[in-house]
Length: 94
Image (cartoon, one colour):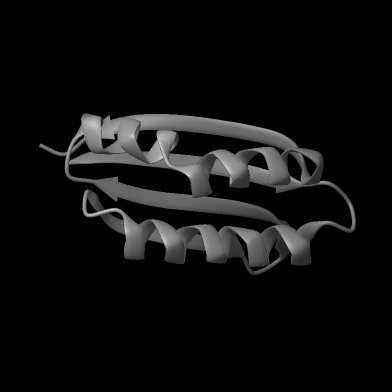
């Protein structure tokens, strides 16, 4: 399995919209991509502007395919103005 961890920080006032967009993206990825096994959107109890995405793909190729999906490309463009910080890590299960 190929795991992607993404931490995001919403710009002030953008946390509700960003949260909704993240949940929508997760649902579309799970519904439309056979290689997407899990896509969780998490936030912190006391830091609602911070989000953590936990994504599991059956392979690194499935993640590459995810990045080329129309819904993902549109999502990445739409959320850009709402995000002030992003960090992404790629891991493999053992």
